[in-house]
Amino acid sequence: SKRIRTAIFQVLSHVVDFKIPLPEAVARPRIHFDGERFQVEGGLPDGSLETLRERFDVNVWDDKDLYFGGVHSVVPQVEPGPDPRRGGAGASVDVDDD
Image 1 (cartoon, rainbow, N blue to C red):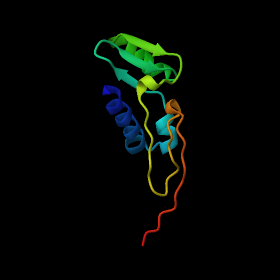
Image 2 (cartoon, rainbow, N blue to C red; image 1 turned 90 degrees about the vertical axis):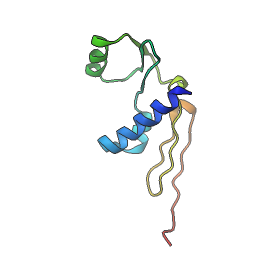
Image 3 (cartoon, rainbow, N blue to C red; image 1 turned 180 degrees about the vertical axis):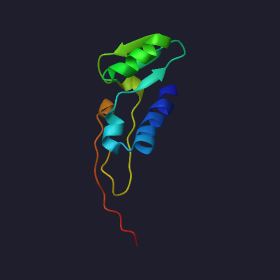
């Protein structure tokens, strides 16, 4: 699916560029350009949404939805980030460095 790439990119950007904790990064609202308009999950900050609307056709979804892909993550020694859009679950696992 084309939306998987955008979902993974957005989560990675939140973590790497903005230092957002993994679980919060996975749960944040997502956007996706479908070739005609921006599809936007509800909860995007109003300023960001208005900036998009000034330049593009925007469709805002009421809730988080599977349409925007599911991102589950595993990182040693980091709180898990299960995706609520997919009913994800998470577990922390201790990794022996030896």
